[in-house]
Length: 456
Image 1 (tube, rainbow, N blue to C red):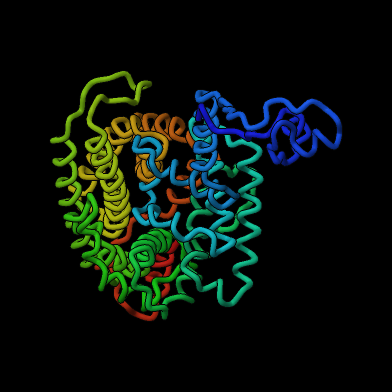
Image 2 (tube, rainbow, N blue to C red):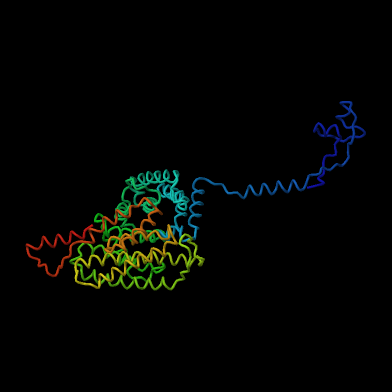
């Protein structure tokens, strides 16, 4: 500020920064030193450059507004930025809405922190379709952190550790390679959920995550005999089955967890449960038609396949991507049920026609969903695998293989064709008519052979 009053001392005392008594005609110090006393008693002013002072104030204010940061805050900020991506091609909430609750849980569980850090590092490399060395190293450190948490009897039953297991399963598809032998995280999640079944989790994060993981375990049990639907999980899906009303596919009966949980039981013994299989297949078939009508009502502008932007509002794109995911799951289920029922009732020609229609629907869906690759269409390879395992016609096989090879480039670590080779002999068994088989001592072996044919 200009015009600030200064000292009234003489020049000699001011120069030496001594206190001046301002006596006349000469101050005491100047008299003692026998030097001229000049300027004693005069009012002086010092002037400060106001612009420079303002600049200093602004600089200090800017410095004070910068929040301190550390590894946790940087990781949280990066993960929030990833969650903020609304483009359906890179929307992390496709893996569950509870992902939005993860940032506020960081800092209390080492496994979750390490896995989120690895997920964020890998997420940045998805558009390049090539995981970086840092992402792979972070994945390895996340695996190590999870192992340490699993050895702790308390942390092992924590919802954060369970969430970390789910995230590492996602990461395995992002950064893994076909040559690597990673553990089956689906079985590990099923084992952990068996241990935490007695926990009374009531929070939004816990309930949303549990119902998501229940659905994953249920699908894993379709093909993996080592995964069992334990009693508490069955009861949980019955209690929280209607929870999906807030999701895009809430009106689809076949996609509700309480109905999905009943499928593995039927698949374990298809002969005994044939009436239930046929009833469930009928419901899935009707639901396929319902979702197909919903998708056909959504805008579908023409655009080049190599340009994924549709020009549609973002919420319309997100809605379409969610319904396409649900439709793909329904088609895969319908194809599986169709093949099993055809094997048990080979005279039903209607089933053959329906199978061809389902395969055509898969091809059309995979082409349309391609605009939302990679994350928004991450479920498409599963329905392509189901269709290819059931396809008998060479032209259909060629189209399905071409589409599957194209989707394979998104995440090369998953060997989809190996899954096709594993499923095909289990869905294409010799035809039997269980009605002609009598449960005599000699035919019990035949019945066991038929049942074992459908076991994964």
